[in-house]
Image 1 (cartoon, rainbow, N blue to C red):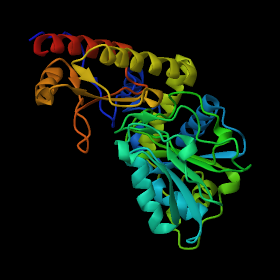
Image 2 (cartoon, rainbow, N blue to C red; image 1 turned 45 degrees about the vertical axis):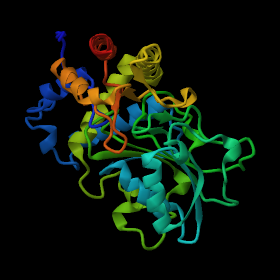
Image 3 (cartoon, rainbow, N blue to C red; image 1 turned 30 degrees about the vertical axis):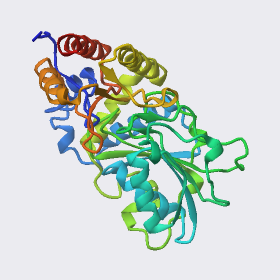
Image 4 (cartoon, rainbow, N blue to C red; image 1 turned 30 degrees about the horizontal axis):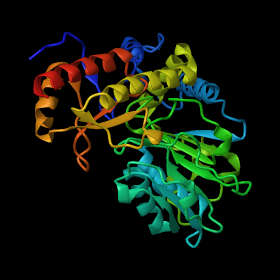
Amino acid sequence: MTVFENPVYNFSAGPAMLPKDVMVKAQTDFLDWQGTGISVVEMSHRSEAFKGIAEQSIRDLSALLDIPDNYRILFLQGGATHLMSMVPLNLCEKTDTADYLLTGHWGVRAYKEARRLVNANVAATSQAVNFTTIPDQAAWQLSEDPVYRYFCDNETIAGVEFQTPPLLPEDPAGTILVSDMTSNFLSRPIAVDKYGIIFAGAQKNFGPAGLTIVIIREDLIGQAREDVPFLYDFKLQADNNSMFNTPPTFNWYIAGLTFAWIKEQGGVEKMGQNALARSGKLYDFIDANDFYGNPVDTRYRSRMNVPFVIADNSLDDTFLSEAANNGLIELKGHRSVGGLRASMYNGMPEAGVDTLLGFMADFAGRYG
């Protein structure tokens, strides 16, 4: 078989590749952060040094997304899955209704959790077509007076992405959108003022697993119902600047380095251009080659996660083994759907996609 001389490119859906410059900076500072004689992993979250790291990261993220002044940014422990409980507990009483748009695994998981806590309504679902599209708005079954509308902006398993916020012309003023943006956060500009809550786990586009960022409109803070676990209360977290208890300090530091790197690269506008370039190359190749296929509605194809199949799926294991030998790892599809998947977040250089395309063409030539 052909062997390509290249570094390892990690196409994992998460934890994912971080920018090399960020990793090198963290390595350089690891034993001694800016002459303090200690590492960030040893640094008290109450120290002036870490307070500076935290404040700079908030300023950089605010600038990157042009976050309005009436929003708060929280840096919370754990994963975005925690927010599937936190959102209904903070916004709703048990008898309140919330609408859920289900376009993949993570939306479904959020809905199943919400229906334990509130009156959760399936406003739309594409499950009948294996989550390969987003239901047309004309078919949505919205509640009469929902507290919020929830959706996952980019489904990592299905490879489906909303191209615009799911708002309707007839939506009443004050419609609260809640969005899980874990897998496409900071990959394009966002009109933050159209949302009530945006949240994202770090392990895709801006840091290690174990940190989740929440951007929340201030008027939605302080509405938690009485039985909310205290660490799940947005008000407690906001009042204590995300430091009521020890936050994931090293993860927060890496996120701050990544925000600074994105600014240096040209901001989220440049990240968006890069994402389109990477995914466009891969989709164009798949569409032009009968050996491979992608089942997703072309209107809603994800720029982050590209699931694909080989016409003869008995070749999947061979493909994965040979790809790994060529420095192309974590290309196996999610266990729930099988096949193959290339995840390409902000840290993935275009050279990684070019290398993958070269391998895919060579593989098809030998086995097709």
